[in-house]
Image 1 (cartoon, rainbow, N blue to C red):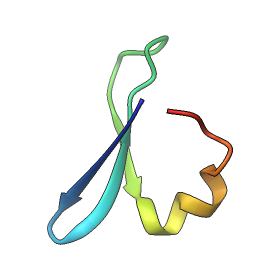
Image 2: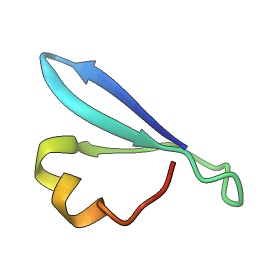
Image 3: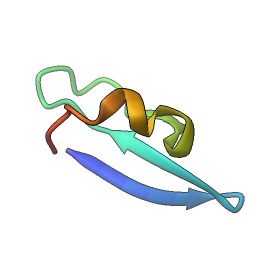
Amino acid sequence: EIELSEIDGKSVAIIRIKEFPIKPVSYDWKACKGANLGLSA
């Protein structure tokens, strides 16, 4: 599941993996978008 959010004016994606519901991982969406095109929400 991918949730797009804006934090401090920056677009970030928060990935929640149901198998590992420990902590959402956030990162710069623009920087990582190209590396994650194969990821399905």
